Length: 139
Image 1 (cartoon, helix red, strand yellow):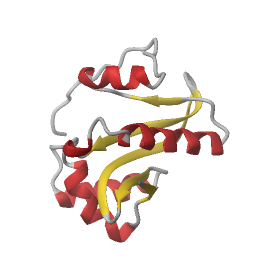
Image 2 (cartoon, rainbow, N blue to C red):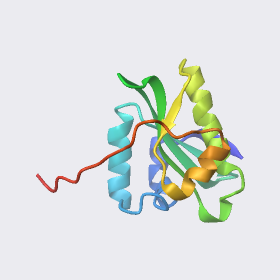
Image 3 (tube, rainbow, N blue to C red):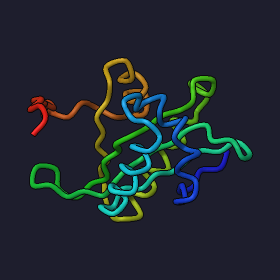
Image 4 (tube, rainbow, N blue to C red):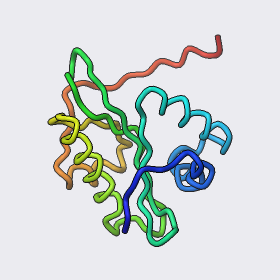
């Protein structure tokens, strides 16, 4: 398995994999969103078996008053047939390596309830804050 950054010309090809997680995005919206986020420091990396993309992780460097400097994982997805095969672990290890490279000692991420056992198994713990959201509707 080869893990490396996704290049601009590959974004269209990454969409089917990321769409397994981000079902609300169509291909065009996905490409636009990644380009916009990349301008703000978002990096998208892929796990490849040969030429086939089998997983992706998107993360960004962040610094907040509450958490200090850290890496935040926004997206982690592994194709259905490859799940439970170590791909997600390898992608997170790559993100952690990138965090260390930037001098960060923490990685944060948001998770769905059903994925919590996976993250706990890799040493992640629940943060003391609770994420809240309020839908405001269209402006």
